[in-house]
Image (spheres, rainbow, N blue to C red):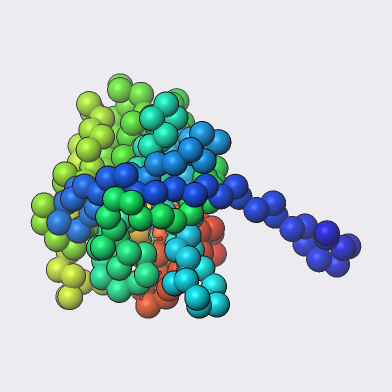
Length: 255
Ligand SMILES: Cc1cc2nc3c(=O)[nH]c(=O)nc-3n(C[C@H](O)[C@H](O)[C@H](O)COP(=O)(O)OP(=O)(O)OC[C@H]3O[C@@H](n4cnc5c(N)ncnc54)[C@H](O)[C@@H]3O)c2cc1C
């Protein structure tokens, strides 16, 4: 219960016990895991670019806390009770390591989803910007945009051949793949350069999801140098270099 001194306690997101039904190699660095389970009959799609938590239980017999990581619901089929999550194989980290060995029959819990992104169908154009972790979010936004909407998409990837991970083409979308040298380039550098060079209508909407420091540079540029109103710009830090379990509520508003 909350007291006058303490902030109100946020209700805990519902949790769903699920098992892995399928694992598909979407691209060299991306695996799609399809979860299923009766519990998903209470799961509700909350729109594009939403987030959920994958909850990894500690090994039986240990008293360690479960590990939670943030992912995007990529597809939910309420009839078939299937939930797809696309995971980047970035190397270190419990979720990335779990994704490497994921196999049908494994069990875990999912919590969420949080609120999705409200697409502005009246916008003059859309600019979608993200690294590999945001590909699922960009795909779900693309699926919700009107077919007549001019859309430009910049995706920064650490390895070639990732385009198969963005399997939701919008008829008008121009998708640009930016290949970063994983060892030499700071994450997000190519995205920032692309945004700086992009043509942007005054009525354009922008969605950016990438590494948190790069996100702040891009946000500052859009609001301060390009003078776009904050209401037209949505930025979301999906991970932070050198930090584990970056919070799911990083909108870069301190930029
Ligand atoms: C709203 C939201 C939605 C997201 N949706 C997705 C999604 O659909 N698919 C997806 O793959 N990820 C998604 N992410 C990103 C994901 O939560 C992070 O990449 C997370 O850190 C992965 O956990 P981990 O256990 O693998 O690594 P952690 O234990 O969190 O981190 C370990 C180390 O790996 C580094 N690291 C983390 N992510 C990356 C990366 N992508 N590239 C290089 N180094 C990295 C960290 O800086 C740290 O040094 C989302 C994040 C948010 C906030």
